[in-house]
Image (tube, rainbow, N blue to C red):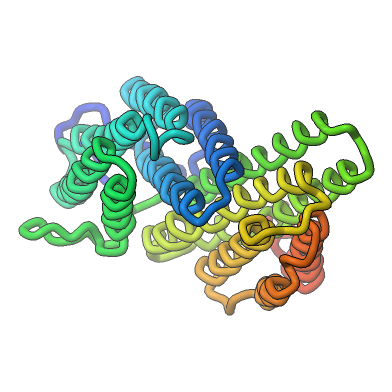
Length: 406
């Protein structure tokens, strides 16, 4: 993450984006093409969780999800600075896309027979992309180059643990990969400190805020798309009986409520906030790099809950099913609330807090309710939060969208 407001000192053609005064760089077609790999990755993760709702299975999927999100968001930071219309950058994204597809195919068996495939693809994407940035910034100011020297060293250290874990089995693999993931997630928070090279500052992470906000909102759409696909395919495969119709309506309304909670106001407010921020790098690090993973995780877990409501509608929920059916909406509300609090500099939204409180109250009777009933209650909470926020912020909405059309 570096300051890219400079020009190339060597006089050669720069690979960096040209900033647009008064607007923001739009997401390009090659970036959207790259994202297609992660549509598949999200599908793989949701199916893997559905196949094993045990505590260990959930831990495995959590670690894999963190890795998938991290490799995507790091690429999002890179394409925030690099110009995807340049041939070298396009080739980088296509190579990363190939590695990402390989990584995605290995997800269901990452803790079994495909551990080394997953680890090798992941390390290649993380370290290879960072090395490309070192090369792309070779004629840039020292601060920009030093920044990526630090990042590359952090990723190389974690990469050793990823590859070591890929060669091991069972608990040793989990331990190595969890340690590697912890190192990578601590990197931005620690400003990628390296002895002798110092640390980066968020003001050096000069992001184009509008582009970053749009990239993350599109990833949320990808995750919601997985929910739609699972709902449609499950209903199509059902006998169209009453239970299936009920599950279909509950899943669809829940998906709409999730979309509304995030896209009604949060996207535009967040985009404006980061564009107007005096330190957009800090906002991007916390609001988009860290907090958006909670939002996406909530959608993924919610999609698994939708599938459960089709496959076991009248069964009394067990611990794993209850955790999914209540945990998905809870993660989503928590992530959205923290995101809105961070980027808009406000208190945690009361509507989201009330929703989390209602979900917490449902924990006690959860395992005496049917899966379909619990899914309906979760969707009801999401719908309540969406309506509450819509009504309470109606004046802000008028001002916001009035300003957009001036």
